[in-house]
Length: 603
Image (cartoon, rainbow, N blue to C red; front, top):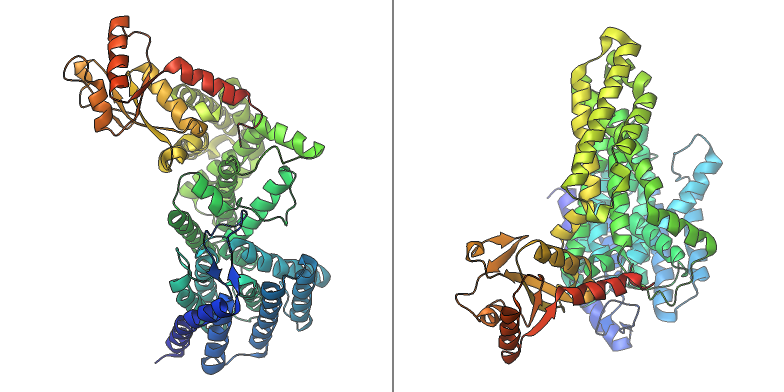
């Protein structure tokens, strides 16, 4: 059996066997995590899962992997962090005491020569390395906030780090990560939702420090990739989920006037659940995101510099929009938050969003213009025809921003974007691209390739439209926030008023109503669909209550004022006798207006 298979199988089987034994021991000695208001689990759960992980990893590595001096340093320092975490699980040591332990382990690793080669200056590299080791350790610790999340994301990271080492011909480190990932997979059998055991701080600190420190060995291997982007970006991309979660939570807590070290249900995973996903789906979405980031890491380590930088910039845009959407989810009691004056000012500026929109469009303009050139000319490093791009880029940014401004693109609200906004976007992109083409033709004469500007206009329009429609697309992809406990309602009137009421109900989860269907007296609408909801038509006068019962609704909302009073009275009497409440659209608008005026009505 190849060493790769031996180490992985041994670690997996050891973890699979040791985890239930450790869980039984934890229950026996009282090492159990009890439910708390700022924690996600709802029943007492065994701790110390990290003991099984460490024993499985260390045993498999010592038995089947011929480790070098650097590898032994990584394993020894990680075990030291395991002991620090174990002390915290039992004795709940102070945060500064844990930090001191992390710094000591990080300093030991650096003292033995493992340093990130990110700059030409050794002292700067040492500081970056210390920050990297402590930061990733705490990031994985903070990511351990939902069943199976930290273990699964770390296993995915281990897979892609192993692929990176294998590509660098560092097979020993690849074997180490294979055994490490296999041990996490064995632990996940018991840690996935619903979890019967948690890894505890001893597990999360070991996992985080192991992943952070073994990435340093890639910087010392002689066979590593020559691309500086691979050296810089690969470890960050592979570990982007814990990095993003920690950065995002820290910023949001600071903006809310809370301590960054304060626990709570405000992590990325919690916000995804608040958006309507189940716990399992939220975790699997983050798994998918971690795998996509890993694939991007493998791409940039092989791609040329300009392609890699552009791909990473595009990925950063995705992260930015993810942060914006997640940041809109209300997870704090705003009566308890006290933002500082500077933070409040920044929040007010970001709320208006105009500066952000302009900055975003500058990035989109550059990326669209660049990728259009790549599609026509190939990478910038391979073609001398890129002179037009570099000579016209600054003016192209100015011309296109001016065209978007005068076309009214910056007057719209993203939340209510519509086809009329798309028309303004099309007009702005066409005018800006035409002006850029004209400028390029004047400046560089006969060297202009028109197809570049056509492709650029298409890419830019797609990017701008996608950014503005992202809020609506997200609402379409995710289930309704109030679908779990909201009141099912049927909307009477499948017309403009009904569509307006549907939109308000979907965009205001505080109303706690879930639209399930429309009903209308117009027989021509029978069997049709409006915004994804079926339209029911009563077979005769006075049968709307029956349709409400068919759709499982206990409330009817009237969306139109065109109903004759006798018909409206008939509907109300019938529904009331059937136990179906009746509301008017005006009542909902008043509730929405009151909600909008309340200071604490938005995330």
